[in-house]
Length: 159
Image 1 (cartoon, rainbow, N blue to C red):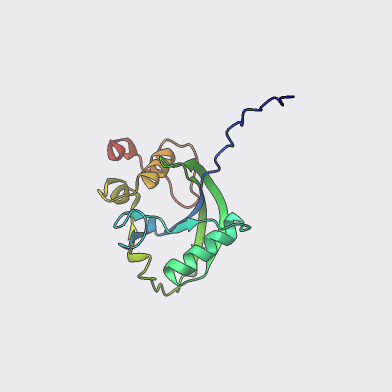
Image 2 (cartoon, one colour; image 1 turned 120 degrees about the horizontal axis):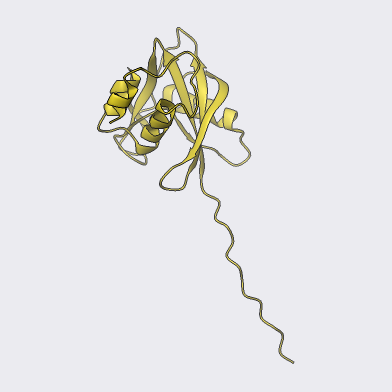
């Protein structure tokens, strides 16, 4: 007797998950230039990284900021979520550093760090595409970032 064969249905692929810290000081964002030893080397982006198995988004972000910048962070509120062009689900969190935090980059992951205005960041040729998507969505008022308003000239900047 032949047993019927069951076609295997494809299992859904669970993409990677990541978390990003949106850190503000005087209307500027804390950004990093990625080192040459990580994915997307040399790109400018907000600090953050992958979520490890069993981690909450908040714990993962605090860990990533400690690893990349050598400082403790307070993860405040979730601002936005999107999926990158390469299939990673990214959660964007408003995050705070102590006013006197002394950043000590991990050169394995971070080449440089900067405070950048939204317009400078958006115009930067090395801006990571997922960060551009985040800024453009903010500029279109899909979400707000407490403590900073979208510039009246945003449409001119984003073009």
